[in-house]
Length: 255
Image 1 (cartoon, rainbow, N blue to C red):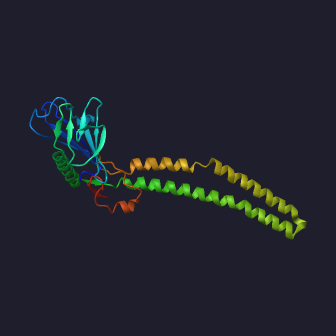
Image 2: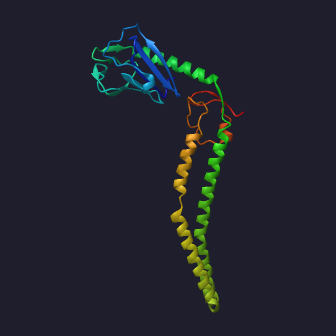
Image 3: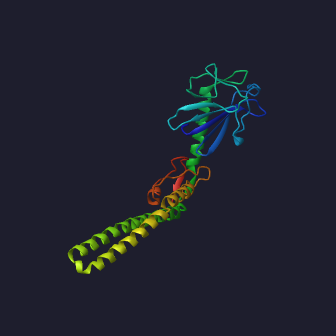
């Protein structure tokens, strides 16, 4: 449930409760734990909009959790040892500030999971059209095809000089009386070879492909403005078969 999410933990401004803010799929939701004034002053405030908190938990794609202290003046302990960053499990003892405020880690994870589920359920009810991604795919695909065709033509051109040289050598060997034609073919082969070397030297296919790919990845994204994840290199006719975004779970339609 919490895979690929970030959990900010700190004191709620004004009320002094523990504030938990979880960000997943581009959406951030908050919840509080405990009574007003229950969190001591040595615990830093949590301001989700500014990315400020006492500490944060980063949950990887495999569910592994890493706890990190966010400010140098903060103090965060795991199992009695002050840490900067440490991999944790739900049974670890986490304490914040010089007052060693004990965090109910299991409760924090559970609260974050509920907020993520609520966010995903809300996102799954929204519907967005991916019709605008069709021209994005077509533009990228056609541009990549043109680059490949150009590379293929340059490759074919590089094989022509060998054919001319072999033909010239054949003429010189079989019909010495028209050896002059053999020299002509050899000269043509040399000119074509020089042209091919120039085209290879000035070819910008790699740079153009990188620029096209970067532009494509920035535009071929989930239409949900709160998600905007890259939808992968799958063609549009394959993408349109998806009924939901794999990241925010919003409904997708090609209408």
